Image (cartoon, rainbow, N blue to C red; front, side):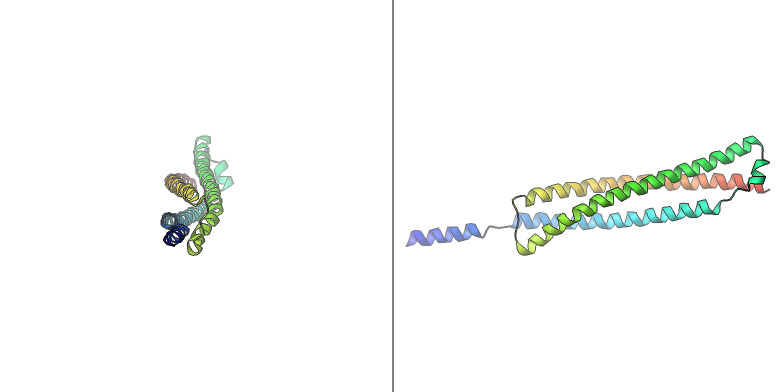
Length: 178
Protein backbone atom coordinates (compact mmCIF):
# COMPACT_ATOMS: atom_id res chain seq x y z
CA UNK A 1 0.00 0.00 0.00
CA UNK A 2 2.85 2.37 0.80
CA UNK A 3 4.34 1.66 -2.62
CA UNK A 4 1.08 2.38 -4.39
CA UNK A 5 0.71 5.68 -2.51
CA UNK A 6 4.31 6.61 -3.29
CA UNK A 7 3.84 5.66 -6.94
CA UNK A 8 0.64 7.72 -7.23
CA UNK A 9 2.29 10.71 -5.54
CA UNK A 10 5.27 10.55 -7.93
CA UNK A 11 2.96 10.14 -10.90
CA UNK A 12 0.90 13.13 -9.79
CA UNK A 13 4.00 15.29 -9.31
CA UNK A 14 5.36 14.32 -12.70
CA UNK A 15 2.06 15.02 -14.42
CA UNK A 16 1.91 18.48 -12.83
CA UNK A 17 5.07 19.54 -14.57
CA UNK A 18 6.16 23.04 -13.76
CA UNK A 19 5.90 25.38 -16.71
CA UNK A 20 7.76 28.23 -15.01
CA UNK A 21 10.52 28.21 -17.62
CA UNK A 22 8.07 28.49 -20.51
CA UNK A 23 5.91 31.11 -18.82
CA UNK A 24 8.90 33.28 -17.90
CA UNK A 25 10.38 33.02 -21.39
CA UNK A 26 7.07 33.86 -23.09
CA UNK A 27 6.40 36.80 -20.79
CA UNK A 28 9.86 38.22 -21.46
CA UNK A 29 9.39 37.76 -25.20
CA UNK A 30 5.96 39.42 -25.07
CA UNK A 31 7.36 42.40 -23.17
CA UNK A 32 10.24 42.85 -25.63
CA UNK A 33 7.88 42.34 -28.55
CA UNK A 34 5.58 45.10 -27.30
CA UNK A 35 8.49 47.52 -26.83
CA UNK A 36 9.77 46.87 -30.34
CA UNK A 37 6.24 47.22 -31.72
CA UNK A 38 6.01 50.65 -30.08
CA UNK A 39 9.41 51.61 -31.54
CA UNK A 40 8.24 50.46 -34.99
CA UNK A 41 5.11 52.57 -34.71
CA UNK A 42 7.17 55.57 -33.66
CA UNK A 43 9.53 55.12 -36.58
CA UNK A 44 6.60 54.68 -38.96
CA UNK A 45 5.24 58.04 -37.82
CA UNK A 46 8.65 59.69 -38.36
CA UNK A 47 8.89 58.15 -41.83
CA UNK A 48 5.39 59.34 -42.73
CA UNK A 49 6.28 62.86 -41.60
CA UNK A 50 9.48 62.80 -43.67
CA UNK A 51 7.56 61.65 -46.76
CA UNK A 52 4.95 64.39 -46.25
CA UNK A 53 7.70 66.99 -45.80
CA UNK A 54 9.48 65.84 -48.95
CA UNK A 55 6.24 65.89 -50.95
CA UNK A 56 5.49 69.41 -49.70
CA UNK A 57 8.99 70.60 -50.60
CA UNK A 58 8.78 69.15 -54.10
CA UNK A 59 5.32 70.60 -54.73
CA UNK A 60 6.42 74.06 -53.55
CA UNK A 61 9.11 74.28 -56.22
CA UNK A 62 8.40 75.69 -59.61
CA UNK A 63 10.81 76.54 -62.35
CA UNK A 64 9.70 79.02 -64.99
CA UNK A 65 10.82 77.32 -68.16
CA UNK A 66 11.09 80.61 -70.08
CA UNK A 67 13.24 82.24 -67.41
CA UNK A 68 15.27 79.04 -67.07
CA UNK A 69 16.02 78.88 -70.78
CA UNK A 70 17.39 82.44 -70.70
CA UNK A 71 19.91 81.58 -67.96
CA UNK A 72 23.51 80.93 -68.80
CA UNK A 73 24.23 77.20 -69.28
CA UNK A 74 26.43 77.25 -66.18
CA UNK A 75 23.53 78.40 -63.99
CA UNK A 76 21.12 75.98 -65.68
CA UNK A 77 23.52 73.17 -64.84
CA UNK A 78 23.65 74.26 -61.19
CA UNK A 79 19.86 74.31 -60.95
CA UNK A 80 19.54 70.98 -62.74
CA UNK A 81 22.22 69.48 -60.46
CA UNK A 82 20.46 70.75 -57.33
CA UNK A 83 17.11 69.44 -58.60
CA UNK A 84 18.67 66.05 -59.39
CA UNK A 85 20.27 66.01 -55.94
CA UNK A 86 16.88 66.59 -54.30
CA UNK A 87 15.25 63.94 -56.46
CA UNK A 88 18.08 61.51 -55.63
CA UNK A 89 17.54 61.97 -51.91
CA UNK A 90 13.83 61.47 -52.57
CA UNK A 91 14.66 58.12 -54.17
CA UNK A 92 16.58 57.17 -51.03
CA UNK A 93 13.53 58.10 -48.95
CA UNK A 94 11.36 55.98 -51.22
CA UNK A 95 13.75 53.02 -50.88
CA UNK A 96 13.77 53.40 -47.09
CA UNK A 97 9.98 53.43 -47.11
CA UNK A 98 9.92 50.23 -49.17
CA UNK A 99 12.52 48.55 -46.93
CA UNK A 100 10.55 49.47 -43.83
CA UNK A 101 7.39 48.08 -45.45
CA UNK A 102 9.18 44.76 -45.97
CA UNK A 103 10.28 44.81 -42.35
CA UNK A 104 6.68 45.39 -41.23
CA UNK A 105 5.50 42.48 -43.37
CA UNK A 106 7.96 40.18 -41.58
CA UNK A 107 6.96 41.60 -38.20
CA UNK A 108 3.28 41.05 -38.88
CA UNK A 109 3.91 37.48 -40.03
CA UNK A 110 5.67 36.67 -36.76
CA UNK A 111 3.03 38.40 -34.62
CA UNK A 112 0.64 35.47 -34.87
CA UNK A 113 3.33 33.18 -33.46
CA UNK A 114 3.82 35.50 -30.49
CA UNK A 115 0.07 35.69 -29.92
CA UNK A 116 -0.18 31.89 -29.98
CA UNK A 117 2.58 31.67 -27.39
CA UNK A 118 0.82 34.25 -25.19
CA UNK A 119 -2.39 32.21 -25.39
CA UNK A 120 -0.52 29.07 -24.39
CA UNK A 121 0.17 30.62 -20.99
CA UNK A 122 -3.52 30.78 -20.09
CA UNK A 123 -4.14 27.23 -21.22
CA UNK A 124 -0.73 26.00 -20.07
CA UNK A 125 -0.44 23.92 -23.20
CA UNK A 126 3.13 24.14 -24.33
CA UNK A 127 4.55 22.21 -27.23
CA UNK A 128 7.88 20.47 -27.41
CA UNK A 129 9.27 23.42 -29.42
CA UNK A 130 7.92 26.22 -27.22
CA UNK A 131 11.29 27.26 -25.78
CA UNK A 132 12.95 26.96 -29.19
CA UNK A 133 10.20 29.11 -30.74
CA UNK A 134 10.63 31.70 -27.99
CA UNK A 135 14.40 31.75 -28.53
CA UNK A 136 13.95 32.19 -32.30
CA UNK A 137 11.43 34.98 -31.85
CA UNK A 138 13.60 36.65 -29.22
CA UNK A 139 16.48 36.67 -31.70
CA UNK A 140 14.12 38.13 -34.29
CA UNK A 141 13.25 40.94 -31.84
CA UNK A 142 16.95 41.63 -31.26
CA UNK A 143 17.61 41.68 -35.00
CA UNK A 144 14.57 43.90 -35.54
CA UNK A 145 15.82 46.43 -33.01
CA UNK A 146 19.10 46.56 -34.93
CA UNK A 147 17.21 47.13 -38.19
CA UNK A 148 15.16 49.90 -36.59
CA UNK A 149 18.37 51.61 -35.46
CA UNK A 150 19.71 51.40 -39.03
CA UNK A 151 16.43 52.73 -40.40
CA UNK A 152 16.58 55.67 -37.99
CA UNK A 153 20.16 56.51 -38.98
CA UNK A 154 19.28 56.31 -42.66
CA UNK A 155 16.23 58.51 -42.14
CA UNK A 156 18.30 61.17 -40.38
CA UNK A 157 20.80 61.15 -43.25
CA UNK A 158 18.02 61.39 -45.83
CA UNK A 159 16.23 64.20 -43.96
CA UNK A 160 19.48 66.13 -43.78
CA UNK A 161 20.01 65.59 -47.51
CA UNK A 162 16.49 66.77 -48.30
CA UNK A 163 16.94 69.92 -46.26
CA UNK A 164 20.34 70.67 -47.77
CA UNK A 165 19.35 69.99 -51.38
CA UNK A 166 16.06 71.85 -51.03
CA UNK A 167 17.86 74.85 -49.56
CA UNK A 168 20.40 74.82 -52.39
CA UNK A 169 17.70 74.57 -55.04
CA UNK A 170 15.49 77.29 -53.56
CA UNK A 171 18.53 79.56 -53.29
CA UNK A 172 19.39 79.00 -56.94
CA UNK A 173 15.78 79.50 -58.01
CA UNK A 174 15.57 82.73 -56.02
CA UNK A 175 18.46 84.07 -58.07
CA UNK A 176 16.47 83.37 -61.25
CA UNK A 177 13.58 85.51 -60.04
CA UNK A 178 15.82 88.57 -59.50
